[in-house]
Length: 238
Image (cartoon, rainbow, N blue to C red; front, side, top):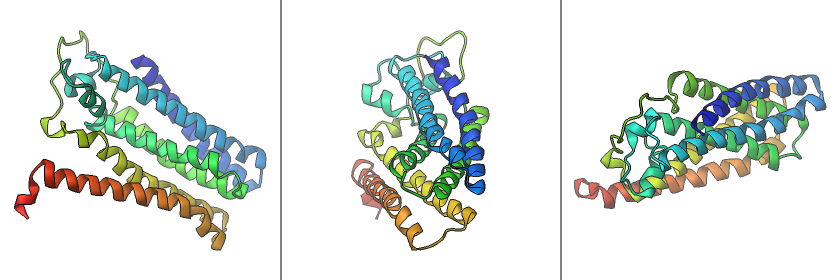
């Protein structure tokens, strides 16, 4: 299962490179057939990265210590919620969550914004795929969460005690939805500039996505403030 997750991540990188070039070429050449491949590639990319993330989550839930990332950040006696949050409680896993949310917003535009002009849709998805490709390459070549250990250790080293709080099961994903969500606003802006269509309609296009990112980022910051103030006791320092 872990190897399937690793291969799915590599396939997602290949697909993101395809999505970054073919729909953009179609948008510039006004070729709707090539542009139509963009939404399909965006959804497929999300499915592949989701499969990869699910594989890493499975490795944590079953305490597969042949995976270096699990060995470094989990333990067989760890409560289920901390095994789950441990998936992104480290650099490698958090980067995988990052690219998952990147793909989520790209697929969201592909599914819910089909009424957009085809050239803007193609250029927007291409720019989003360029961002995703850069992060996917970084994850695979410099921060791989699927590195293996042999022989597998009998027990893990445990999760950082500072991260063992229920709030951290929700706080980082909310922040990432906000931070990474703004990538789609950038992609819309860059795509509109590429095809030369900056007008009032452009503002209406990006408004719902801007609101989604803004709301989730606000919720994440609020939850982080509560966690720091009440759970860590930082309120006594202010």
